[in-house]
Image 1 (cartoon, rainbow, N blue to C red):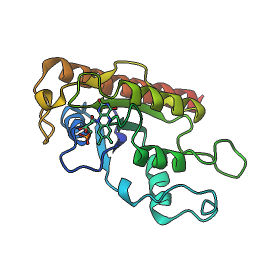
Image 2 (image 1 turned 135 degrees about the vertical axis):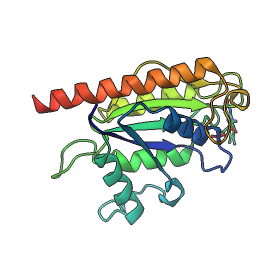
Image 3 (image 1 turned 90 degrees about the vertical axis):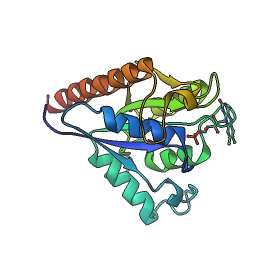
Image 4 (image 1 turned 180 degrees about the vertical axis):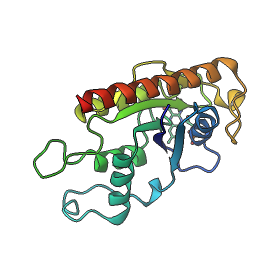
Length: 194
Ligand SMILES: Cc1cc2nc3c(=O)[nH]c(=O)nc-3n(C[C@H](O)[C@H](O)[C@H](O)COP(=O)(O)O)c2cc1C
């Protein structure tokens, strides 16, 4: 397989985040040829405003460029109050603009292969947040994987902070998601080349 670059975004700013740990797990389990780079500047993204959009702040330009340069996105979302954490939604709102080609460029999320996953110490955590993300990526025309779904419940029992996976099912699902992402990238590349 030729090299494939993935930009991974954890929706948690917490040092001991299970979702950041899930990204570390993906880095450990990445198939040969896949490089997963973690985006570490979510806290630097300012609140979205159309007033500042014409001259986007440097962290936003950097985020857009990194999304555009990556072959795919891997997102690990926590669930806050049944939804996507504000910091993650805010960053994706910035990256979603413009939502159609009204200028010479279009959102870097358009047609971008995306894999979604989530981890929580609760029994149902991230199901609802992941659905919200899927809804967002409908409008951006992103190429979101439907399956396998990675919903790591009781994450404290299954994941170590260094990304060690302590649960066979979680490891198998994670490998399956990364393999599916490779396929989606290749299909997208073929479609673009045609
Ligand atoms: C503001 C807030 C709201 C939360 N709401 C939910 C929720 O709706 N569902 C859930 O399963 N867990 C909820 N939790 C608990 C999170 O699942 C838990 O804090 C988790 O560890 C956050 O992800 P992280 O470890 O990646 O930071 C909430 C936590 C916070 C701080």
